[in-house]
Image 1 (cartoon, protein in one colour):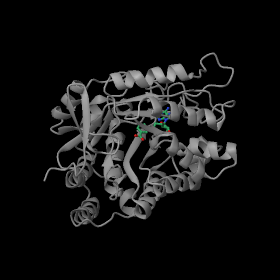
Image 2 (tube, helix red, strand yellow; image 1 turned 90 degrees about the vertical axis):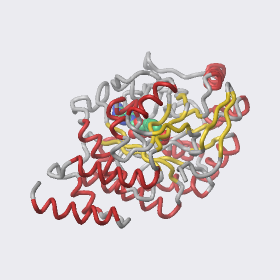
Image 3 (cartoon, protein in one colour; image 1 turned 45 degrees about the vertical axis):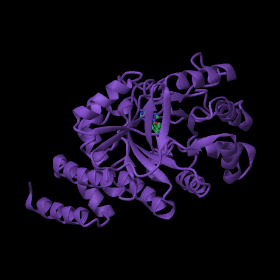
Image 4 (cartoon, protein in one colour; image 1 turned 180 degrees about the vertical axis):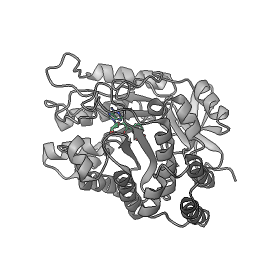
Length: 378
Ligand code: V47
């Protein structure tokens, strides 16, 4: 290793050991290919173990995408369809409730609901999805609608975001997923999704959600036209909001899958890039309790290794995932609890089933309960 790299890395190591926040320059330096990945991984692992010990979390969850028809045309998305497309679909109440029943029958504690912004569906249609599911399956946590969807509902109804969120909460919304963040910097955002909620709006919606008591997640879509500066800028913007509200639970770096998208000429990011981004995210986001290695998107092997590169969560067993599989993901459609626990143990970690709010789930035959309190070992 070059001696100047060694010196700089030593200074960063001291910061990490003394819990001093890394700067933008530190983050950019860690993206320099001259800095060995294994060194960054070791530092991220220190932070991961400080925050979450040897535990690796998962939940039993299922996805619901009520429609893929979308007014927006983000060029990284393979899931969306036009109103007249043969592959466009809209689920009715019976189909939605059947998914809820299936989730409960499978022991799921969470349903992750996101979808297209359908040209002809009004706000009530989206609220109704939450209401009927919550009324029928009150114990199923509904983690639903990205900030982009909330922004669309507010624009469509000309009502304030706070009111929109409150109406969703009253209907049964439990928390919000982290999608729609993509890359915040306008140099990139304006090229990949210029029409939808901008960065200011995404941040404002998560701030409002936190003020209303909702916990939310955050994501970053990397490995397309962005560079290291845009990624670090993205992480720092999230870190600033978390300083202000403390409402984020998990950060999920999302590797771009190019197949069937408007950016299909690009190559998928490498495993080296996936692990570097995971580790740098853990190091920069010192105020985020959890970093998720979403196995659907990373692939099972990389997700296992990521548990030693900063990640402490694999997401869930998952069912009915469409967004990544439409874009060429080759991972299975779902994992069983036995499979996910084995993957975690093979990685040298202790599996813990959590609910969406990171409370430990205990099971006795078909019944499940949550235990409050700190998930970390004493
Ligand atoms: O916002 C879309 C991304 C996101 C592609 O909060 C793509 O727990 C790669 O946000 N290649 C939706 N990425 C998924 C998401 C998510 C996933 C898992 C857990 C959580 C959580 C949130 O997927 C979108 C976009 O950034 N995406 N198309 C693609 N071709």
